[in-house]
Image (cartoon, rainbow, N blue to C red; front, side):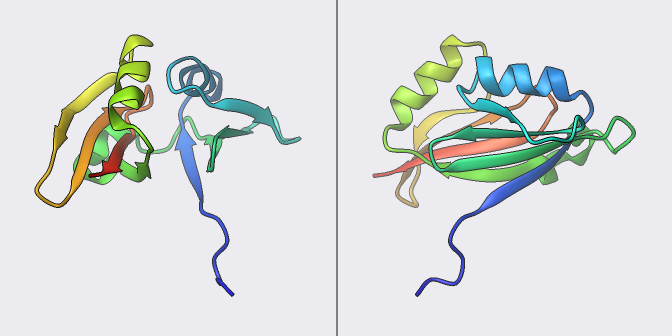
Length: 121
């Protein structure tokens, strides 16, 4: 039996409503209330992100390479790339095949967090 059954990310965001709009409109996530006005769940397929409003926290953009928080494995990296690019996502690393066997790209969220998305070749 697997010990870990699911992964969930927890992020501090400076403006929860702005983040929710980005995850819904650009990345295609469902945004759910959880009973606390300072928190939301962003969910798409098997990914859940619990976002908490922390306006006084260190901005993710100031973390440099440490602002990466996730690598999402996707079924079709090209389709995923094209979908979110058409919705206005900021692409940091263009889609390309890598020598480690992944077709991948990187994006930056409205808050400054970075996400890698990749498909196994």
